[in-house]
Length: 333
Image 1 (tube, rainbow, N blue to C red):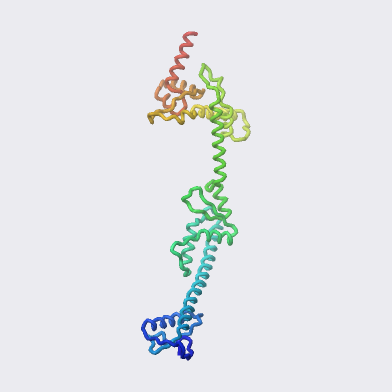
Image 2 (tube, rainbow, N blue to C red):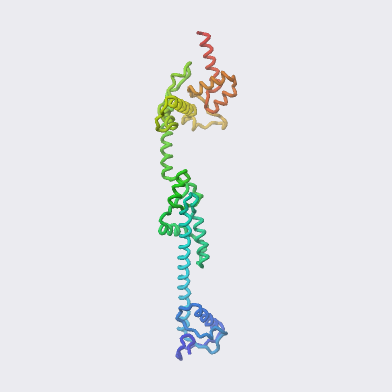
């Protein structure tokens, strides 16, 4: 009788005559006891030692092995599905609870969510791959199941993607902690274009030289307009004194721009010595008047030169030339 099918068919019966074959039958019996849904029927005496004078059909043995392998493949898949389903529900509940807090601190990071999800899978009996990667899966899972969820990527590429609610996102956007990269790029383009326009306006402005008075100075028009708007915006100033104060501040700022301006040739010129500074040639009422007033009150060459290094005054040599011209004019008059 075949020990597998339990049928007494004398044809094609084989004897269990070697220990290895007996071990195979013992393994089949053990697997069949564990895998309850298998259709294989094996006598309980195979769970003991190697059977003597045991017979089997070769097709029955092959069929038993196939059934055992099929059962082993099918049932773990169901367990894996259940483990992942439980882990999905748990991670969704955790994320939704956390991001619905009302403070901006309720911001999660995809790296942390992925680590937590992997721990849940492991705890629920899920067999993890060697290199678990679930960020894309988790992102789609949250988008499909959490109505109030947003994903933002910081400008710093070293930081992970953030997961937050609408309230938390608005709270972050308010102080400018999260920026829209596309909008930022457009703003930078506008600033670079404005800088190009202002440089052209300064370069085309007529050079001013001190000739005994400061009243004949006209700052570059577009530069003056830019400085006015940068200081006061587009608002109307209500009082005359405040308007004059802001106009003076804008004029000083514009003149400082003119003093600090460097031509394209100056910027790109390669000097033989690395410590050679730019030569100051532009004059404005700001740098001439400040240099003359400081030298008049302090008689300090060092202080005038220090102001010159900050583009706030003409060089000390120029101060001496102007004072000499003024003295000669007084004597000749």
